[in-house]
Length: 313
Image (cartoon, rainbow, N blue to C red; front, side, top):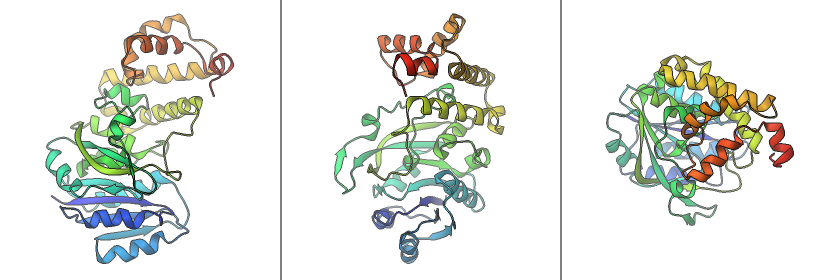
């Protein structure tokens, strides 16, 4: 079994050496590291070149910045040409630090599943541990239904996953309108042999002011719009045809539900049975009954009304 790491970089000189050094220190070696630089203007590429003597690095450089999704898509397309179905792929970000046994532990635990994802300790910009569990801090739901993933909600962070290279037959090419690559790979895993969490903390996940992706700065309505973009992209993809009938019907209805929230002040009461029946998919992070009732009731409020009456942005 080969091990491949795909790494996307962009102006990452501040933390990249520390990240690469953690790959050098792995208790299980990797066969290839496919690094795609997204048009860096700093010394990122020079740092990558310096580590070619310590790590099996293959480096691709974009002349212009094309975005995180494009960089990983390029890396995964290269990986697909050199790996067998049972080989393993790990996604890497430029600013984290990997636990020394990450490759070893995840290689042992993936079994027959298409993908697994671990936990992490959170570190700050200086490398200090500020939280013991990313999963606990972020309120990660360990087990999500396929329908919940179809809404755009996800429980997986790419730098904490390992997946079988055979999954790329379903995941590639990554559709242009897919906002985040790891979210897409997770959905594809549910259409194959599934995915599962493991308890191990496999990286030190760095949270700092320059993190490349994330939804921390998005408003409520922007997140809703992203969910609609995601849902439509899934419906227009080849993966849609691989989903069970129940999931396809749910996705069609969910898209209609979001479109109505953007175009109407209030939804018709006729939506009540569907929302109640699917509340666990639409709001999987809500665990208490009172909060779920509140979410269900708020589901009938259109975006324009929410902005006017509830000061949502």
